[in-house]
Amino acid sequence: MFLEYKDAHIFYTDKGKGNPIVLLHGFLENSSMWLPFITSLSKNKRVICIDLLGHGQTDCLGYIHTMELMAEAVEAVLKKLKITKVIFVGHSMGGYVALAFAEKNPEMVKGLCLMNSTAQADSSERKKNRDRAILVVKQDYKMFVNMAISNLFRPKNRILFSEEIKQIKKEALQTPLQGIIAALEGMKTRKNREKILQIASYKQLMIISKKDPVLDYDSLINQTINTCVKVVEFPDGHMSHIENKEDLLNTLMRFVEKI
Ligand code: MLT
Image (cartoon, rainbow, N blue to C red; front, side, top):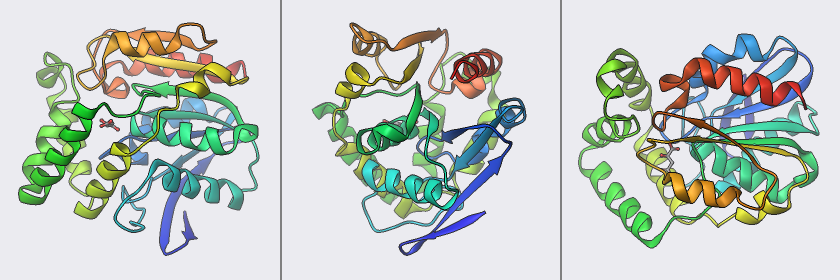
């Protein structure tokens, strides 16, 4: 289904009845990443998956997609569906968007799961890498996407999941150049939101992968110290929905069933 928001069409799916869960994909992904999880999750929950700005079937809205702007598009979808309280599960960039949403609308959040994501802002090193990535993607879009996707997996899993990786690359190559650059700019300028982990009164979970090539394990663990955030650890890389699929489903089912 589509919602018209500002100048963009926002694509979303809506399945099941019960407490709403909003699933937000990461950079270069789209809502289809959640397909293997929707049937189980929607047995007694309402599951909404949204293509974030410039990804999947959702249009771009200008040249920088800040996490706040992406969160506003999510808010518009929820408003249209007359949903006032949600459980968020955000994969990586989707987690950044969920945090931006939670900062603006804490009263609408019933639970927050950051999956292979972080509440910290980009370090200066990471910001430089974003600028480099923007140059590379402008020069050779296909090479950038292929490399970016491979680098998300634990090295030994790049062979094990080669078929899945092929499919993910195919999906990622549908992301328009403008969407890629706008997301890189948006992630680069995002705020530190560790405060949310410290003060939130709703249930929070961080799914942390020990061999995540994108995020540093120790720094993620540090974010949860002296907070009520529950931690679940997986042994593999950044793509838990592929690399630790069954464990992820069980973890998510457990997380949402008690809310
Ligand atoms: C993602 O998977 O969404 C990205 O790797 C996040 C990031 O680059 O910070």
